[in-house]
Length: 166
Ligand SMILES: [Ca+2]
Image (cartoon, rainbow, N blue to C red; front, side):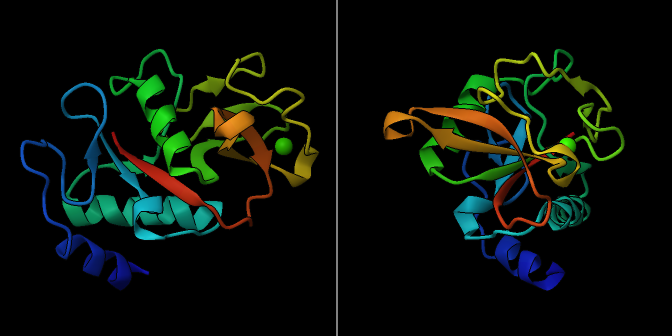
């Protein structure tokens, strides 16, 4: 995996005018950098997605983890733009929250902030998978995939993912 990622990185040309490391895309305020695995056809389970974010961070010399959305203290929070990018790519996408430590207590792994069950980002009736579904998936839904919602899902599911530079 590490070698595959490295090859992707060295083959990726740094976008002109971006302040982000190779393979990361600037979304929102300057310096807010995200890696979209969907752009590289890269789908893995949730833990492998996290590991890949960590490896990417080591390669570019930054702290990288699965992306966090909707946090008040997130300096990279053009969340609408980020969610719209997920929608446009049209794939189920891992984000960095889990309730594996305590059922129904969803915690962003990097910041340790809680994602409330009352958040409007959840799809209606989610989360509902109990202890079998402890990882946070964002996916397009509705007519013409008009909106992205959060789902709880089995962590072993293979999906695209987004890394964020912290
Ligand atoms: Ca759960």
